Length: 289
Ligand SMILES: [Zn+2]
Image (cartoon, rainbow, N blue to C red; front, side):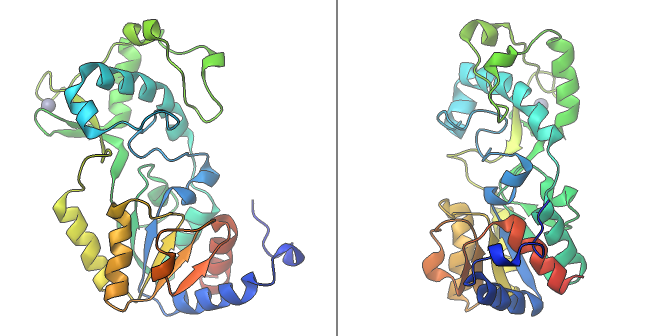
């Protein structure tokens, strides 16, 4: 819970004018949101991109490893089987709900997210473009069939009734260290549609390109935007940063709300360095109440 109005003195004075300008920009409407991992941290989701349900402290899974190294793929799915509990249990936070409210109020149009956790949609947002895909689906590397992750989880539970790391092997953020012998005991299942194709989470791994039609859809959203509002992304990855460059080039105002500096700061017309869990509910209170 974030009590913005209850702690006015705790707000740095410098934030007040900057929120006013941001609120004016959002009030103009046609806002396109570009969100990143920072929006989901209040929901207990670390940056899962590429390591989906896996270990972010370890080298992120790359597309090349996943597709070419059966052992690496096996390790990914064993860890992901464990990490999925945390993803499934995650709930949208005040920031997600605020975006949904601003959209319902007609101020936010499209939402482009770099997150793969589905929490925007769970928080009430519509027409969300999942730039890097979504963890709630799998895609077959053999036949391309897209299926639900929940369905895969049921099959994995049947195939691995006793699988699971000991409690002391699970880290607070849901990551799990899995010793080799535990990995060996994990049974992976394959695609049902073609009867044997290897499955991949329907997310874009590092080293993999975002499908062209999805990128074009995002460019079209940005081109038609009144402003681009970046939420919780350091914009280190070009797949998201390019939309800031595009908006900037088109003369479309860019606002960035993020804790800490971002790669896009030099392109931003407006910058708020404050937690999304404070800024977004306050915007929704002012504009969508
Ligand atoms: Zn298949």
